[in-house]
Image (tube, rainbow, N blue to C red; front, side, top):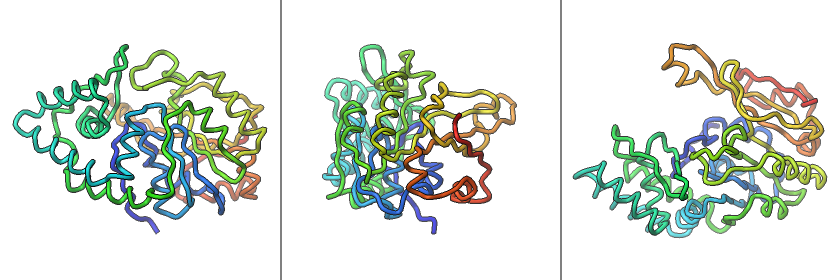
Length: 307
């Protein structure tokens, strides 16, 4: 059964669109579902909606974002009220008001201000200048999400997570060292091809070699994990290749036609890749064909063991 999954935090790069495919590879029993690069926590929210895990650990190095999650879970009424107030106050001059809130957020780091900015900024995409200040522009074609609908999702997610969710803002490697074999780790780090070059889309990049070492650690501890790492549009690939010695299973999921390619008159399809650790595949007890069948048979995908 497909149900409506609430999402209070708009976030570019969210895996909300392919969440159902990722959930298909969850083991039957999970201790804690851990997202070291939580962002909008799309997979955790979906897992909570479908009863896939009893406990959750959301982490992201972006502290105001995690403070926003803390408030959504534990004080939803205040977050919803602040968002509605800001949304109403913008109506006289939306563009000018947006820049006012952006300046106030950079000065105070108030998490409720961040929610308004994400709802109003271009493509729900965080951008930072070299000083670490939020500098994304407003999307002047819209006013942001309707406050009533935003409140509905805030309260729904609060209900799903309250009393069973840990919120932290640490280096992802610290979080990985808290995981056990009973848990499931899901990682969606910034694309390596851009985050290492000071790309303003990311609060903090992830060093490639350190990340590979972290994956080796999970393997040696036999901690099951799922990784969203790279993708491609047409023949253009994003992200550096992962070493074959990690022994991961890669699944390509067809997301759909690339919006950017369509604007340029090209008919190109975007694919997202997810990787399954060997310990997870062993836990699932599925062979090659059964792994593929876990996803809707109408979905075009490819499965391979990285060699």
